[in-house]
Length: 451
Image 1: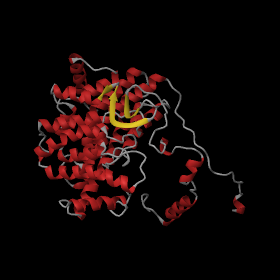
Image 2: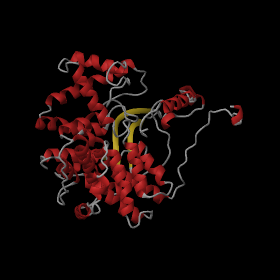
Image 3: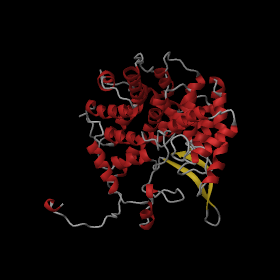
Image 4: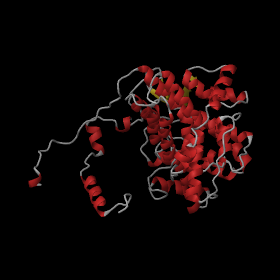
């Protein structure tokens, strides 16, 4: 019997489990519990304090009413739009500067940025034989799982893994930030070779390249990329670096860190969260939705595209989940600032890489979907394209494999996780232990002879 086989016995146990689950949606309202830590308006339950980043989606008028507004994202109090415009104007890469800001709560000057970038480059190395023994010898079909395993394995190579002093955790986090691109790309290379039968190519990062440039250098078969491609990827890394303390993977980082565990365990837990299709894997759903659309309708006929979108909402198309993926967000209503930033560069990249028709299709969906959703759904807030809607398109135009979409998210978000882990440690708070209400009535114990 193979351990991964669902046997008739396991199937029976599964059905028994389903029968015993009586937690229905109405119980949440009866006990005044906000499922998913969010109310009907999408407002999150406050569970902590942070200085690292914040999201603004509403403003208060003179009468004290909350009014939806264009979304804004701040890193350490600095508007991300201003941050992006600053390094674009100077024709610089911005991710390393963003990492510095998130970790140390201030923007670096030229000397500090140069020293910090050089340090990340110097420590961008893995233990001897690590790639062969821990990544390639047991290749998996999901890069995120291999990435998690590699992070946990680094614990063994750390001479001081359990010290949770700020200095030691910072050391660990900086190393993880520097090597995440290597871990992710090498995991993909192993998958591609052992599961798809392709040639195995492992390319070392180059010390003089930025994080974004090194990702493209290691992923591309020829190692080549254009200036625009590397700068668009750098921009994507910047806007994915953090998103307040309330997103699932960052909250996971806080929860696990609060137990006093080591850095590698905390980051592996965050990776497990990010892997989920409702979080980091959402842009993959967008791409696959558009692929399904192309298979079933003539995308040059906008009426057919609109009918397909309606079929999505009616649970008659794609995965029949009733969703138009990439539309709407738990917090934003008027607009997602990250989507707006990606949107501004998507058209230029589309022209450079020959994706004009694809871009125009995405634009039509972005313009048409909100009205359809409002028509078919009881809406508590507005709907607009979110960051996942455009990031999948951006990565396709960069010729990045879909297996690396979520790992690239992780290559960016490791900077935010690191900042939040350090913040949680420095706060010296209690272990995070949320309360649950039991809705199960007391039952008597029945001796086994009478069951």
